[in-house]
Structure formats: C-alpha cells, structure tokens
Image 1 (tube, rainbow, N blue to C red):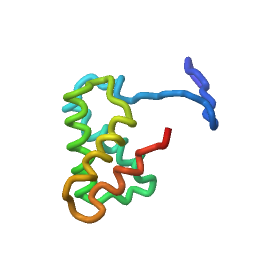
Image 2: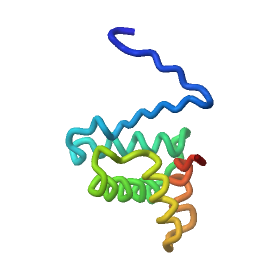
Image 3: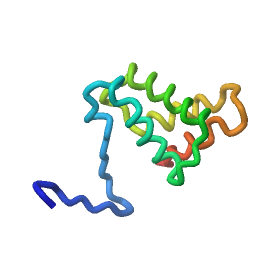
Length: 102
C-alpha cells in the first residue's frame, strides 16, 4: 500500500464510501458512474438496456437535486418510488437490488 489507508469492513462497521463526492463533472463522468452503480445492482452484470436506462435517468435526476451529496441509498429509495409507476415487467428489479434494509 502506497500512502493509503487500510479499512476493514465487517458486519456492524459503519463506514461510508461515497463515490459521488469525487465527481468533478457529472456529464463527463456519467458513463463510469452508471457502470459503477450497475455493478452494485447486479454483480453478474445482468442488467438489460431498459434497466440501465432507468438507472441512468434516476442518477441524472438525483445529481441535479443533490449533486455530490447523493448517496447509494438515495438511488435505491428513488428506484423504490419509481417502481410504483407503470413500466415493463422487471424494469426496476435490478435497480431495487441496491436497496439495503437499515
């Protein structure tokens, strides 16, 4: 490790790593951000085009509202809200995997 810190994650550890705090220009970094959130939502990368598009829309709206203060929990909560709107079967299912019970 070069000039870094070691962080140990375990059950009960309350560590928050917020990747959104590091964003300089959302438009330039949007594809990378969407890819990161997609990886969180589906470890096997099984999101279809509709689900990726849905996450992209949610991320864009949340960035406009919250900017660098956005958190993964915000994305999950917004997806839960959006799930109540009419959409094709499974449209939000992958996005909902981001939701973690508190």
